[in-house]
Length: 295
Image 1 (cartoon, rainbow, N blue to C red):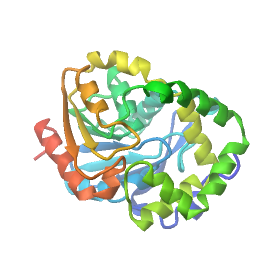
Image 2: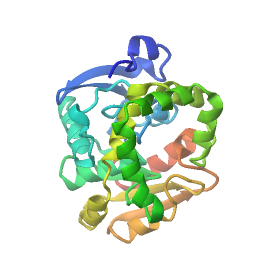
Image 3: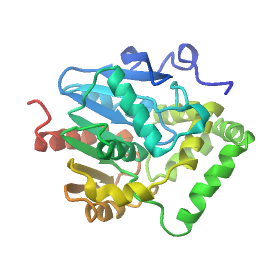
């Protein structure tokens, strides 16, 4: 799609730009960031975000790990999967191909929201075998009630209309609209974070990539497979999360055998952007419990 984000233009002041590189894997060009020295730790962002979501958390974690982050297909500066086939299994395979290309075997894998679903799918499909998966406000279960019946069909309709991404992009030019959008997640983030979300959500190709992912996101199969998960899963949950119900973490714990849950008071869906140092401490503690912190 015309109008994609261009790193030489849109990434001139990108967070942690000095850690950025571009990698060809699986027929896609990926925007990747690598920083720090230590056991490899993978970061996978959620729908509609990019590596900018880790702008403050990644440097904190890079004090103890080699941190690897990237933009998901169709997001930010990474190519979309051809034909819009951004299903959960396809995303998992694509990320697996990237890790093979850069020869990374993460000791710890951290995923935010839908990024956690990708990591769990990868573990179930034997594309990833870390010492632990850490989910930050992890979206691992299907939407319930009316939202479950509406969400996917609505996303499919939106992605089929080529005007919708441009409409989203136009609205993103209004910073008040961005503040309301972030506010609906239960989080309050800094002005720089708001400006970065405005930049990416103001790009029609990025919005189209996020909508394509949402339209094909089916978590029923993942939920059914959770009892097979053989890797420890630690869920860190913002008590004010308005995007993924905090009580879902307990439901996940009832489905898999190696799940632990901890809650963060006063934080929403973007907890890692609100208080990155605190979240980094929780991630490190989880890595130590899994024997994967290299210390």
